[in-house]
Amino acid sequence: MTINQLAQTGVNQAEHWSFIATIVGVIFTALWSLHQWRVESARRREDHIKEQETKRAELAQREQELRWKQAELARNMFDAIFDYPPSNDAWRMVDGEEDGYDDGRGQRFRISMAMVRHALPAPWSDEA
Image (tube, rainbow, N blue to C red; front, side, top):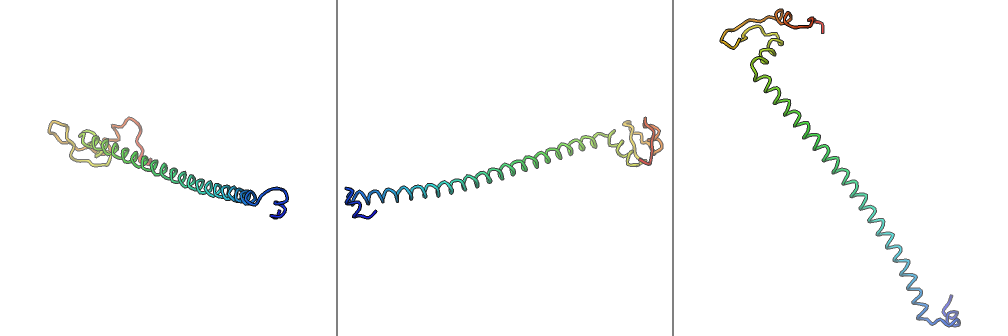
């Protein structure tokens, strides 16, 4: 519509430009809102990705701490086993050492693999 046609219908020029400004404002507001929505959606996605990465890092940290605790427990158990003289002697016997076993009263003994095999309850096999 031209201004002449608007003037004939009884709409003055101020109302016409006010209407056009309103339409432009609505279109600008809609486009701006869409832009803001896209920006916020991208930020939320980035935040979500960072949160997942943080959770993965925390899980990896916990797994590493668990492995350290397991290793420490195993070390403590082995220390306890090897610090106990009878178990230390048993390990040495299994390793095939024959000399230097103490009975606890100051006497030393020589123990061979044949004696170890004879003392074991199950049949011994070198093949296994």
